[in-house]
Length: 136
Image 1 (spheres, rainbow, N blue to C red):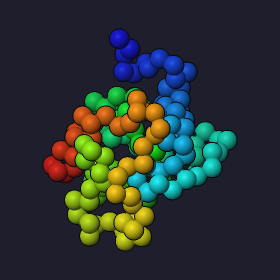
Image 2: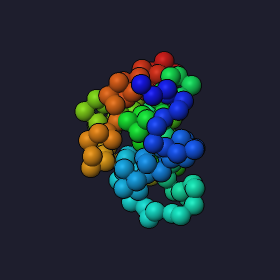
Image 3: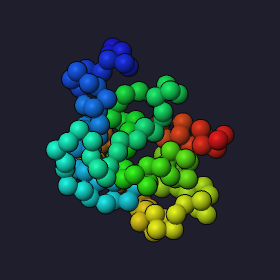
Image 4: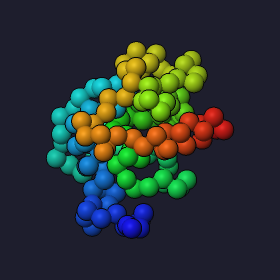
């Protein structure tokens, strides 16, 4: 078994390796809005981030099934709990009035998922995020 703090196959900097893997798996597309971006050569993409579904400080693994590729505004709303994901990958808005109207209009009904199902978000992590945000 691989220790969660030393994932295999991600090189010397596992977080940077995972970040690139997430963006590549999602085809440089925001999982929440479907917006596509061109790949960038630098370490950090100027428009996309890899956001943890189950935060690392809450036991979330450094694994692609625990991350979504999202544009920054959608990422902020997801981390704040304004956007949560159902087990069938539907996008849910627990308190729609808290979401910026421009972002709400851009959201899809369901996540835009990677082509490879092995990269899809783990339902256990999605459930953890929903429960965490309900308590918040």
